[in-house]
Every structure is written in structure tokens, then in C-alpha cells.
Image 1 (cartoon, rainbow, N blue to C red):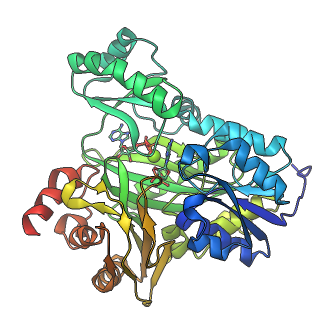
Image 2 (image 1 turned 180 degrees about the vertical axis):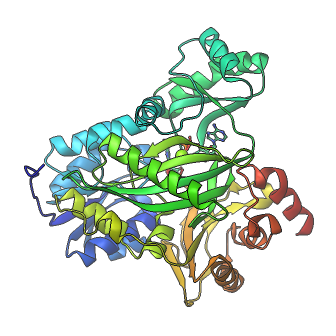
Length: 460
Ligand code: ADP
Ligand code: ADP
Ligand code: MG
């Protein structure tokens, strides 16, 4: 594999916003790469806009007209003399058509090759790749085209099952059904919802794990065929199938399970031919101790900082280097993990209203500098949380010598944080981190809905 073209990146077009735009600009600067940031009219005066070397307005606030507008983004990237494009996460980051469009226009896509993005975006296909690579996969069906096929598959699998959109993402496109009547009632709406949300109505059914933990493995590859894994993250604390708190390493796993999950992550990355950063997600069944492949995300993950803290790496730097044809800066034997890191997503949501996203203007925004605390954020006083984009304001990461130390550091910073103008998840995160269930690694993905939120509402 020595015929890989080396194309040093001089200027990156950052096709995203918010904290991940800030994060990408930082690694570009470290590598001496110039940045041009795409901004909608709502983001012209944002923190990342001030950090970038220059900005190009790509459209009005609505994402469809700006951060999801492929022709506008490509034209802006080429017009500003960029030779590469970083898609961040969300928006077009997992869109194979967009990855291919970049390549066709001579822009280095800072992510996996378009065919890897395409295979990863199709959950049913990704399950096949995992199965062929000998990785445990949840019992499930291929794509089912009608309700009778779904009903047969579900009867074989055994209820409860999830009806899942193969193109789903962001925690959307999933319905738990307990029996055949529910499946028949739900099926056709699930297809239409998937069609309108993801432009693809394909569905499959999968065994639903009642007491699940979400464990995922960070993987990294280069264009010369090298792949490494950087350990696992536990992202079990979720609301609406979306993560709220993440940590690395995952607590309470046996050494054997930890090592098998990591190996499965690496095997998947090898099987799909990963040539950039990616994340292999697994479901861990807290009742049986078994784990199984869930999906593969062919992009930088929101919670990548916890892995960076415990491994001492810069994953965005590695993405940029792999994209320009460099070899990985380290091999598997060089990857070691030290200490424990926890991330809390501070979002403008009201836990008291079932984590409903809230708009408003930040009248106060203060997170003190503290030892062992990293803050990735685009927020500042006067920042307007509009209705157009997701509700993430900041990722607060605590890094400690062990889990207790990381939790203690996180509790101190959450105590000292001052935000007014919008409700946030900070207070709920404090409650959760201090809870016995969390301390004893006893939470499952339904914990917030079943236990955490009801108790929080009672005590606050
Ligand atoms: P991670 O897996 O990195 O934790 P999330 O599931 O929190 O990522 O998603 C990251 C961001 O991308 C969120 O803003 C989420 O809404 C968005 N997102 C992810 N996948 C999709 C998708 N298929 N369609 C729309 N938005 C998505
Ligand atoms: P997305 O693309 O939206 O991230 P995932 O397949 O990764 O979709 O699932 C998101 C979350 O939904 C998981 O983290 C988990 O909490 C829950 N989930 C998904 N599949 C299952 C399953 N088979 N059993 C139990 N929970 C599941
Ligand atoms: Mg997922």
C-alpha cells in the first residue's frame, strides 16, 4: 500500500459550527494549516468565526439552507482556495454523497473514504460486515420491506424488538415494540418517519436489550492500511437515546470483556478498511454480560475528548494527518491509557420538562479554569441559542487519577459553573454523578427515564 498519494493540506474548509468548529480550528492551527469557516448568517459573530483565519457565509440560519447545503459549501470551499474539508459531526459528516462530492471537486475529505462512509451509514450493511468479521451482533433481520416480513423476523427474534431505520442517527428512528400487535401498528409510520427524517425509509428489526449499557471503541486508521484502537468509552447515561455523560475507561467491566470489546472494535475497523477516525458502538447486556455490535460512526465523535485525555492523543490531528496521506504517528503498542476521564454535555435543555430544548440568550456564562478540567465550547455571554441547531453549549471534561477523582473534579466545576439565560443540564448532571447507581456503575440506558429524572424532580 505504498501508492498512497501524499497531499499536504494547506487550508481546511470547516463545514460545521459550534464547539466542534472550535475544536477543529485548534488542531489545524497546531499543524500550521489555515482555516476557512462556513458560517450561516446566525453564526457570523460566533466564537469559532473569530478563531478562524476567515469565514464565508454559506446561507441563512436554517440548516437545510446552510450547513446541509452541499452546492453552497463546495462552492465556498473552492472559492476560498481550500484544499480540504472537515465535516465535524452531525450535518453532512456521515453523508457519502457529500464525501464523494468533495473528492470529485479535488477537496481532501477529512474523514474516511466515501465507500467507508456509505457502508457505515447503512446500519443493516454494517451489521453484515461485523458478522462476517466474527464480531457478536444482536439477533436481527436484514432490511424488511413489508410488515409481514417484519412480523416473521420479530417472531423469530423474540419480543421485545426494536424497529430501526437503517439510515437513522442522533438517537432517532427507533421504536421499541413488545408484541406483534404493536409491531403491526407501528411499522408503516416508522417507515414514513425514516423516509422524511433520513431520506431513506429502509427498516430492520433487532432484539431489544432491556438493561443495556452503551460501550464504544475509538478506532483510528491511515491510508496505508494501519488501524489502532484507543480503548473504550461508556456512554450509558442517555435521554431519548442520546448521550448526556460519557467516560473512559468504562467502569465495572471484567478484564476479559474489556479486552474482547476492544478487539472487536479493532476487528471491525480492519474489516471496513477504516482510514480515518471512527467509533464502533456496542450494546452491553447488564443481565448476561454479553456484548454485541450496534453501529459504526465514520466520523469524529462528540465525546472524543475523554479518549484524548486518557490516551494523551489528539484525534482531530490524526484525522487531518491521515487525510493528507501521513502514516499514523503511533502503533497499537504505543497506545496506553492512564487515569479516568468523564465528560458532561451541558445543553440548553430543561430536565424539568423532560429535557426539552430551550432557546434564549446567555446572560451569564462562566466556567472557571480548574486543574484537570477541559472545556470545549462555543458559548459566551450574549450567545443566542436559537431554534436552528442542536442544544449543545459545552462539553466539560474532568480528568483524574481514577474514577472517584474525576467525579470529584467534575462535581467541583459543576458547583462553580454559572449560567443564566437558558436552563441547562448542569444541575441534573451533578445529581446523576452523585447518585449511588452511577457511582456503582449500575446505570443502564433507561436510567434517566426510569429512575434519574423522577428522583431528580422529587428532590429539586
Ligand atoms: P455521538 O454519537 O458522537 O455521541 P450524537 O448521536 O450525539 O453523536 O450526534 C451528534 C450530533 O449529530 C448531534 O447534533 C445529532 O443531533 C447529530 N446527528 C447524528 N446523526 C444524525 C443524523 N443521521 N441525522 C441528523 N443529525 C444527526
Ligand atoms: P443512532 O444512530 O441514533 O446513534 P444507535 O443504533 O447507535 O443509533 O442507538 C442509539 C441508542 O439507542 C443506543 O445507545 C442505545 O441506548 C439504544 N439502542 C439501540 N439499539 C438498541 C437495542 N437493540 N437494545 C437496546 N437499546 C438499544
Ligand atoms: Mg449510535
